[in-house]
Length: 140
Ligand SMILES: Nc1ncnc2c1ncn2[C@@H]1O[C@H](COP(=O)(O)OP(=O)(O)O)[C@@H](O)[C@H]1O
Ligand SMILES: [Mg+2]
Image (cartoon, rainbow, N blue to C red; front, side, top):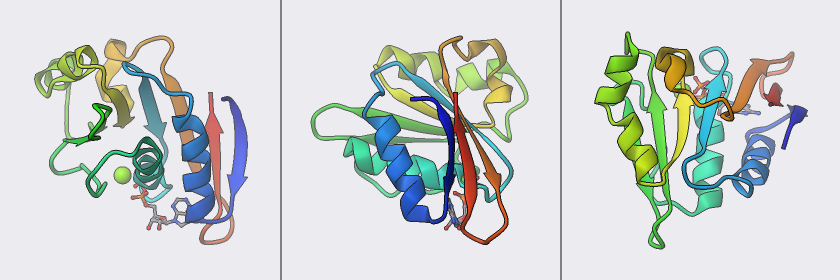
C-alpha cells in the first residue's frame, strides 16, 4: 500500500493504519518519520488495534521499546530510538531478537538503526497541515 493521504482526524489516521496492518506480516519493519506531534504514535495505536494486540500504546520515548502481543501469537513491537546513539544500542534492545520471533516492528526515529533497517521496510512519513487535526501521511 503506497501513496500520499491527507487525513482530517485521529479516526482517519487509525483507518489508514488499519489498511496498512492488513498487509503486514511477521518480520516486517515499519519506519515512522515526522516531527514531534505529527502522529507517529497515534498511527501505531491504530496498527495495534487492527492487529488485535493487547495493551495501551503510549509513547515509548522513555522506555524505548514496548511489546504488544495478542492471544493468538501476533506480536507488535513499538520502538522509539530517539535516545539511542548507535546501531549497537539498537541491537542491545533486541532488534534482531524481536524479528527472529516474528514481530512486526514499528519504529520511531529509524535513522538511529542505520543499516539494520531492511531495504524492504515500509516507510510512513507524517507532516502537519493547516488545521489542528490535519495530517499528510505518505506511505512508501
Ligand atoms: N489526524 C491526526 N492523526 C494523528 N494524530 C492527530 C491527528 N489529529 C490530531 N492528532 C493529535 O496529535 C497528537 C499526535 O501525537 P503523537 O501520535 O504522540 O505524535 P508523535 O508520536 O509523532 O510525536 C496527538 O495528541 C493526537 O491526538
Ligand atoms: Mg511518538
